Image 1: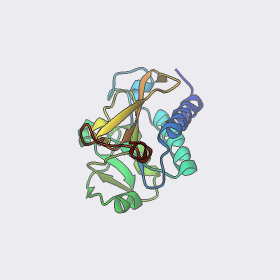
Image 2: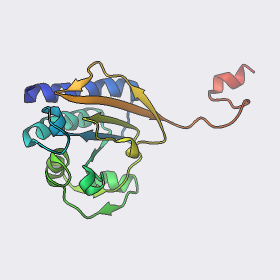
Image 3: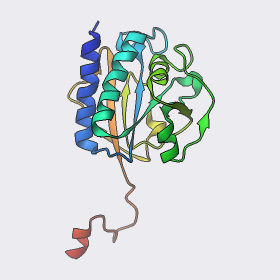
Length: 188
């Protein structure tokens, strides 16, 4: 098994890569979906590890503190993939709190860990995040804004868990005459 320090370091590495691609700011949200079971090579939802969850959360929170973006941690399907966030995030983005406390068997080890670590944790049903990281095929897409753009990480797994990342961009709307950059309009 991969060491706990290596998990934290891998999480930081992929967040740094995503930050380079997405340029997340203090008014944007990064959604994290992570299965500690998958990281240790087990089927999602079967072997949650509080130690692995702690290592993942350590990496994410350190990156959040460095870059200033907001984070939302997706729970498992037993809480309908609801998300753990800071109360300040809920207020800033006009989200609605729901009542549930994530625990390892209903919410997952990562959501349970972060619920105990945030300053004022709350749970919400939905966010429209600006970027996301999925560790272990937890399916974070329902919490991303409409146009997701894959970001290819330099590593493909964290531990044994498959890794995917995405940033989002605004929709391109219009027809044949639509202009998407001001410079393009000036040259026509």
